[in-house]
Image (cartoon, rainbow, N blue to C red; front, side, top):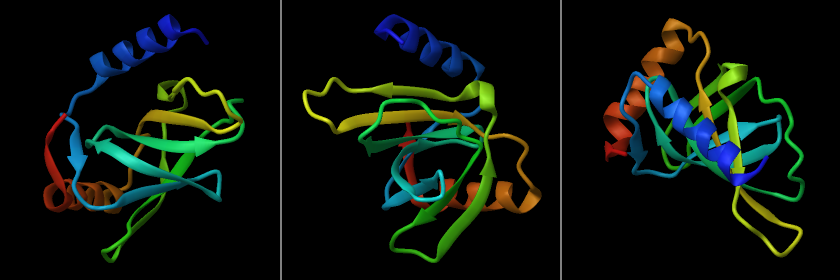
Length: 129
């Protein structure tokens, strides 16, 4: 995907957002594809974005992820994602390591998942992005 395509996808996703995004002030991470780790950049009740490092730029389908805080007792597993809302972008790299960013929209959350995300936003974020 060229830069223009990725940019238009990000703009379209931003238009669909219903809730303001907040920057996480503690060390918050996601686990995706069962064993990959990403650092959360921002979060809202609609979704989140996270940065990651990969060796392979080939996109893999992302269906769900786990959210956790490194220095707190917080772990939320199997957060569903809307497949058509996932945008993956990369920073230019001259090595075999790629710095990437996923922007995702949550799927149908359970009451418990929604409550835990509200708690995370209320207690572990700063002003909106």
